[in-house]
Image (cartoon, rainbow, N blue to C red; front, top):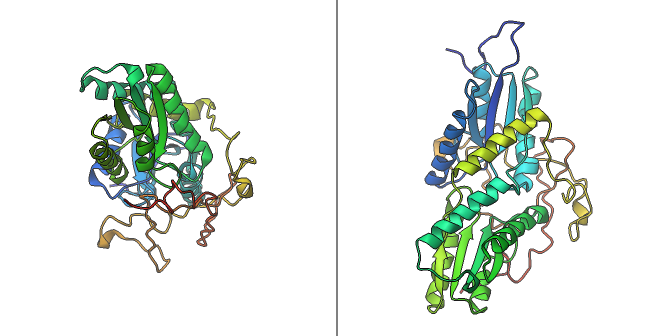
Amino acid sequence: MPDAAHPVPFPADAPERFGVMVCGHGSRDEKAVAEFAALAERLKGRFPGWPVDYGYLEFARPVIRDGLDRLRAAGVTRVLAVPGMLFAAGHAKNDIPSVLNTYAAAHPGLAVEYGRDLGIDPKMLAAAADRVREALAAADEVPAHETLLVVVGRGASDPDANSNVAKVTRMLWEGFGFGWAETAYSGVTFPLVAPALDKAARLGFRRILVFPYFLFTGILVDRIYAATDDAAARHKDIEFLKAPYLADHPLVVDTFVERVHEILSGDNRMNCGLCKYRTQVLGFEAEVGLPQESHHHHVEGIGTGPADAPDHGHGHHHDHDHGHHHAHGHSRDHGHAHADHGHHHHPYPHADHPLGPRTLKPR
């Protein structure tokens, strides 16, 4: 049987063999990991004849390196890798490319090319609209202008990614004709869900619809729904609805397929115009040109059990709380990857914001 160290040999005149790699963050939530794996399985049917694999940065198995090993074992010579993420913040811009670059450098016969995030896309917006409709269809009819929409994103130390969530909010707001809309985040930035819902409740609408703009379930989605229940208990005169997250909506799968094909067509348009690592973004000027590096290489697989916590020769295990309550950014640059273990995290400039994770007082 072939293994990663001894991939299936191809004749010298054989054309290159493509493989698809879906790179996720990982979660301690078993259901979230299962949902990601299910999406990867669905993608296999969209690329007949091409091996399709997946892996995570941390907290789950397989790690990205494991998926790449399996693609090599299947005889793949050209990997088309895409981030399994909605928007390009630190994980998609830095951590995943660093892992891919390090792997490619160790295997000179393997070409690894990287695609862009799902991003703002008509198909993604249509999938989001379907999830909102599902919530509305399960409730009594209330005029759209008496409904307030709250879209909740993950939250990042990257204002470009955070602004994309706000754009999703506006597109859904105008598309449905809701009376008002607000954007909130599950962590890192501001406003968090609880203060956003309290503000929304003061605006006087009959109904508040909360939509987690997330791909998969997990502790963050659970917290969003719990915060919604808490708000409903405090504001009994308002109806609160909880929309389902995106999951493997067919249009989400279609968007992943398109991102893979963009790599081959050369139409791989990651937004660099507002990238804080490339241009002077208000409030983040000090991060232009910082080194591109991953802080996940030493925690790959951690969280999957004591026997699965790898050391990789570092002699230590770190566990960053990627429920994402740490309110700092990560220093990087978009030119190259480093294997620097120093983790020079750049401070998030608004870590002390009164509606953000560090200073928000529990009720």
